[in-house]
Amino acid sequence: MTEAGLRFQVSSAAPYNPRPMRIGAWQFDVRRGDVDSNLEEVERGVRAAAADGVELLAFPEMWPTSFVPDADENDWVAASERAVEALRGLSRVHGVALCGSAFARGPAGALPRNRLHLFERGEEVLAFDKVHLFTPTAESLAFSAGEAPPRTVELRGARVSGVVCYDLRFAPLLRVPFRDEAEILVVPAQWPDSRASHWSALVTGRAVEMQACLLAANRIGREEVGRRRFELSFPGNSLVVGPHGTVLARGRGERGLVSAEIELAEIRDLRRQVPVRSDDRGDLYSTW
Image (cartoon, rainbow, N blue to C red; front, side, top):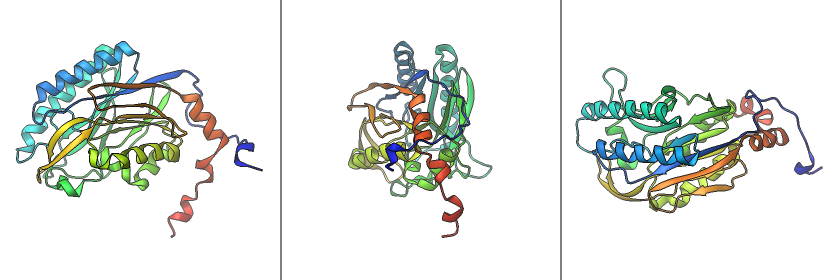
């Protein structure tokens, strides 16, 4: 019998919710070190998303400051914390769940973290520190790496998790939200044009692999990134991808909102038809 001819019944941790949900990314040119300008841009994005009926909105990686070279990280942590608190307030005022990453305080004596925050109506429901630091731009000179896996949380009837940019390349990390039945994976990023094909392949591939929707927010513009001052161009190719790998919305290199309606019922139906989680052999993989 073919795969298409089979029907399986498996349980899900999330309640069945056939209601569609609109999700999106606000892509823009993140100005290095210009917190006020970047916050104004984020406010513009939240207003546009609220008007479009978006319930979950993502911003690019390090949206308040970008990657600031040769600077006092503690100063940027403080500035980022103020911007992140403003983001919390925007989620409360506009009723949109908001996600992005920013400088955050690390453990005592350690460099700062690149931390993803997810706010729902003024409450932080998810925080995750980027685990994989990008060697070519010497991220390890400015950040300490996170050590905890991403959690999965309930958000408006969906199960949501998130990772940051380079983390997308590492399948073992993403097995955690996969096993936790995350239905939406949010990925704030600064992913350059030179590897745009990798970005598209990874985002669509992870959606199929996880049987989930991916909301991937990438920036536009040009930037000297990191302590090594690599000059990079960013294509603004933010993506909303469905569980079959179908691209539902794609950024075209301009500032603005990239959004699409997703169907949670489609995710849950696919998982019943093709029960990848129950067929997973994690016990075996760990012995190899």
